[in-house]
Image 1 (cartoon, rainbow, N blue to C red):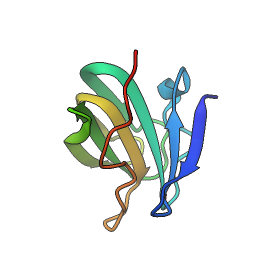
Image 2 (cartoon, rainbow, N blue to C red; image 1 turned 180 degrees about the vertical axis):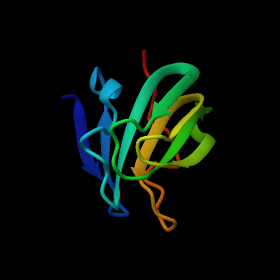
Image 3 (cartoon, helix red, strand yellow; image 1 turned 120 degrees about the horizontal axis):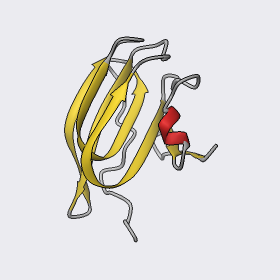
Length: 114
């Protein structure tokens, strides 16, 4: 599994998911409060998130990198098993649904190479 975990200065645990693990998403490893899963992709295109197999509601954010900064293209709370959403993005961020959720993504995007 290609998951890199680290804590941000504000105490949010982030899990960066790469490779084939992106296809699995958070199924079987839903984020706890204070955790977020970040799924980076190459290039901007329409991406779909579904909740089949996910047992807890999730806050999902679709973001793009423009001029070295993240911009949210869509933010939605999805319900277990039946929720789904799509939007154009370069990153998907999934976290435990909470009205007071902290923003686990940085204000500035990491340098993109390749």
